[in-house]
Amino acid sequence: MDSKTEDLEIRIAFQEDLLNKLDHAVGEQQQQLLKMQAQIRLLVEHIQLLDGGDVSPETELPPHY
Image 1 (cartoon, rainbow, N blue to C red):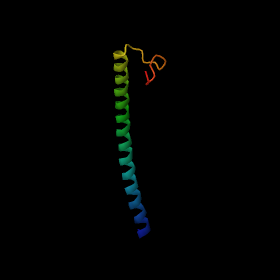
Image 2 (image 1 turned 120 degrees about the horizontal axis):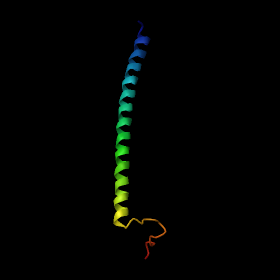
Image 3 (image 1 turned 30 degrees about the horizontal axis):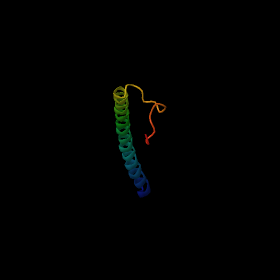
Image 4 (image 1 turned 45 degrees about the horizontal axis):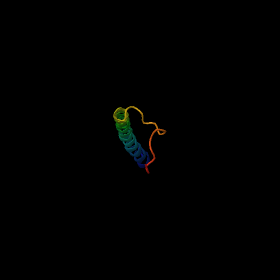
C-alpha cells in the first residue's frame, strides 16, 4: 500500500474515534439537560406552592413598591 493511502486510513481512524467521543459527550450533555429541566420544574412547583400557587406577572407588584 502506498503512503498516501495509509495516511488517509490513519486520519479516518482518528476521525471516527473523535466522532465517537463527541457523540458520547453530546449524549451525556443531553442527559444533564434533561435532569436540569426536571429540577427546574420541581423548583417552579415548589415556588408556586410557597406563593400560594399564584405567580402570574399580572399579580406581582412592581419592584418599586
